[in-house]
Figure 1 (cartoon, rainbow, N blue to C red):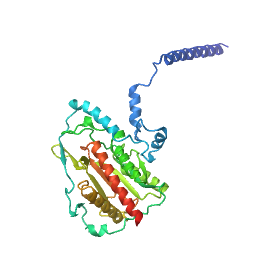
Figure 2 (figure 1 turned 60 degrees about the horizontal axis):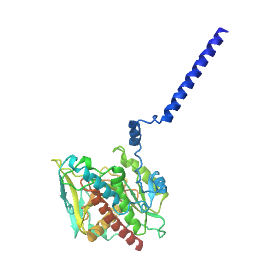
Figure 3 (figure 1 turned 120 degrees about the vertical axis):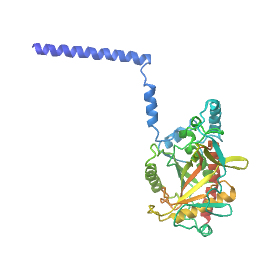
Figure 4 (figure 1 turned 30 degrees about the horizontal axis):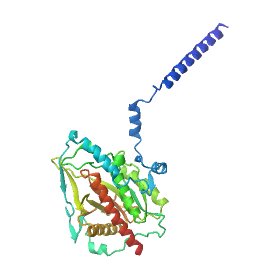
Amino acid sequence: MRRRTRRRRRKTVNLNKIAFFCLILSIITVCGVFSVPQRAVNKLNEKNTDITKPSESQTVKIDSEINKGEIKSVSSFLPSGYSDITDAEAKAKELLLNASNDGKIISEDYSSKNATSAIGSLYLRNTTKNSNINIEAYLRKKIFANIDKDKSKPVVLVYHTHASESYQITENEFYSNSLVADSSTLGIVRVGDALCNKIEASGYEVIHDRTVYDTSYSGAFERSREKISDILRANPSIQIVIDLHRDSITRKDGSRVKTVTEIDGKKMAQIQIITGCEEGAVKSFPNWEKNLTFALRLQKNISDTYPNAARPLLFCARKYNMDLVPCALNIEIGTDANTLREAVYSAEILGSSISEIIKECEKQ
């Protein structure tokens, strides 16, 4: 009997403690002082970097599509004109006086820099050991792309193995780490939006994969390859695949180079097309000559239409997932010393040239 009584008393005491705790919790909740510490919120936001965040102007439908990592048609949610860039520039100018000086910026025209051969305004930089390229012969070849007449189906896929690459916001004589654009909204993915929008304006459907693969730099190409392969299997109409990047050129003295020229009175970040081949350690790249044909034709279109807009086409012993389709390229727009405005303008120029190439393929 005594043992039972003790158990009941303990049970009653425990119930009283629970009731008291619930009362305190209710008071705290009503007073609104129970909140997640800001450090915890920040930590959560840091981890949630797999998908590029949409801007406030985007609709709920587009938000849902972006959360899947890829979207079809970007034109419906792009900011009007360059409004988002203009706003960012205005904010950056307010910080300019206190901005860190992290190296001088040198503006250079790289349209023929390090070229190994050329035809007219088309420059090629061949870094391979065994492949000698006859540019004229490749320009006579047919581009290996079968464009579907059904224009509701995607023709182009744009993605970013290094989606965290960013640009300067304002144009200065010095590079500043404190004036780097937020890569989640104003980095290379924003430049990709401009590229896709330009192609769509010509009547062709585009899929823009905005997934962030470089949460860690190592293994980024393997991660992007897996996702891109899935997209291609689900969309066999895609004939052109662009992995859009941004370059970086830093000299020994710490100064940074921005590759720049002017088109129609506006500064643009110069474009570098990269394609590869089988050589040395690079294996299983059977369609590299088809990629090179596409690359040279695109390079010619850019060079003929927009003189000095492109750096020499880089032909190298690399694969960079370009073996997935016969018209897959790695393209770099400017460097980290270029401004976002210059890069977006370049993307529009690149988009016009890609659209012209698609039209050529339709006539084949």
